[in-house]
Length: 123
Image (cartoon, rainbow, N blue to C red; front, side, top):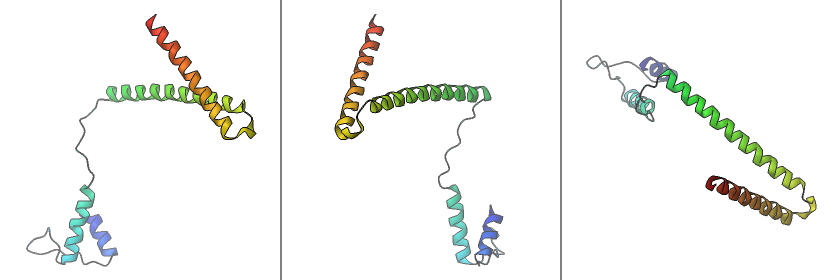
């Protein structure tokens, strides 16, 4: 880390000589100040280390995420197709009224589907 800083500081025109009595500090105050800033910038935003997770746990988590994302993708495609079908059935010149009709129609379909699901779960 220090070598990267010193290379950067030299390119920027700073003197990177260190003190003889304190080798951890730079001879020039401005270089020392930039070194402290450099260290703070590197440590800023670091989070506490997370507990180690086994490969099996990682694989299971990835599988669940894949299943959820494929389920979500199926739902998105279904909704997108319903919306496209609804808009294709409207008159293009209807403007805002046509959009409102589509939205109302989709809301009604959603209520019907929600009612069907609640009846299925109570039966």
